[in-house]
Image 1 (tube, rainbow, N blue to C red):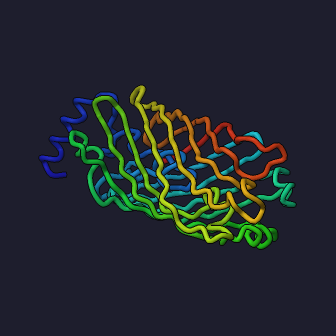
Image 2 (cartoon, rainbow, N blue to C red):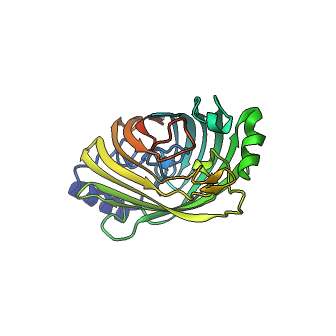
Image 3 (cartoon, rainbow, N blue to C red):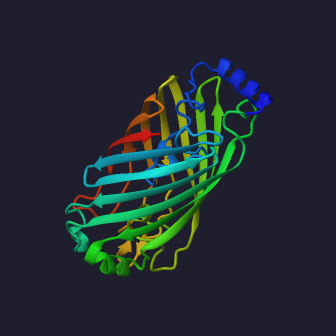
Amino acid sequence: MPRPAALLLSAALAAAPAFAQTAGGKLLLTGGVSSIDGAGGGGLTPWALTGSYATAGEVGATAFVTHARTQDYGLWTYGVALAWNDRAEVSLARQDFDTGHNLAPLGLAGLHLKQDFLGGKLRVAGDAILDSDTLMPQIAVGLEAKRTQAGTLGPTLYGALGARHSGTDVYVSATKLFLAPGVLVNLTLRSTDANQNGLLGFGGAHGQGRRLQPELSIAKLLRRDLAVGLEFRAKPDNLNASVLGTGALKEDDWKDVFLAWTPSKHLSLTAAWVDLGRIAPAVQPRRQTGAYLSAQIAL
């Protein structure tokens, strides 16, 4: 690292003891955790930061598993990611969404919806640490290619909805790290036509196309290895006026309140309360709230 940059980083660290530098040179907790889509960031939304603690000239890897449980549904997600040079990230993830008997009104009792993700992210401007004393955020662009499977019921389900079984989200994220108060803020703008993040396909029978949806994360350092925060993710609601009737598949925004513990750069654990709103016509239609737990290993 050039000497001026090293001096700036040292000065920033001295002014912000709430953050701790790892052996590899990257600040603890600035690798984020793994989102449900596999990208590095928060649990619900990606950040401009690359996952793992790889810095300039290094390659880092992460692996994660996440489970979310609401009143009527369960979700398992697991995946891996590679980060290079603190600039680029590639991720793979799979989701398994257990609907139980809650889609019986649609004749789909016992359905498991599975979805595969291939993600890519590239930092295009800024540096969260070196620019921490300016208004410049770190900025990254990314994409998430998604493919959903519903077994033998897939053609029936997606045909009824007029939706495709694959699609690609494109996003731009801006992450600002305020070292002195120990606060991180991220804003993501996503172009998407995914229904329930893709679990109910992409687009709809009435020709709904892409929409720009905002996503927000705020995290506060309580101590060097512990952060608390909240997230919000807006959803496109393509199926609200579906062939099943207006409101039958209304899609609500997602939100959570989380606590992330990172005892070392190799391990992070995240617990959250999530509100996923209405997902589909359950036996007892209601907002889906519940617990979210995630574990990530980083190398």
